[in-house]
Length: 176
Image 1: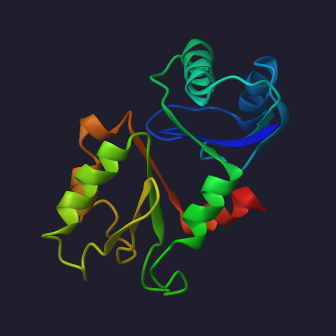
Image 2: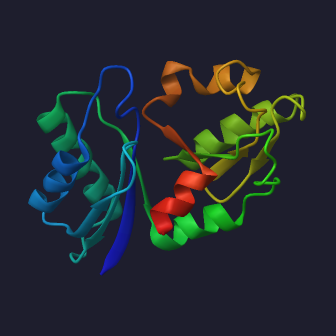
């Protein structure tokens, strides 16, 4: 049995509303077990008892989300241990009250590579960035998460189907 966490992109923002109960129901209809949603930002923890490939599980979920909720659905699918590694690897002071501890998940390693190329010339005070295993860590000053150069790069349409970000505190609640 594999425990997965589906991190949905763009849920309950920009006019896309997905209620937690409906999301849980959809995952159960897909045959997943022990389904629970965490917060209202598109986080679903579930177990998959089949030996279905991860790429197939991801595609099934995205197709079902598109069909049910009528939006361009993209998810990042990680295992519990991968999520734990992402949390454990956070290299900045997660308790600094002046900063936001973000983890950017990418569906492809080439995307992490591209995002990290930006880090070479980034101002570490404005856009502190570090590479992790399949993720990029970002620790901007509170209130600047849509204004920094990295935020503007991350907002480009080409990254929409390939990335999603979560605050470190949210990730800890998901594992809770």
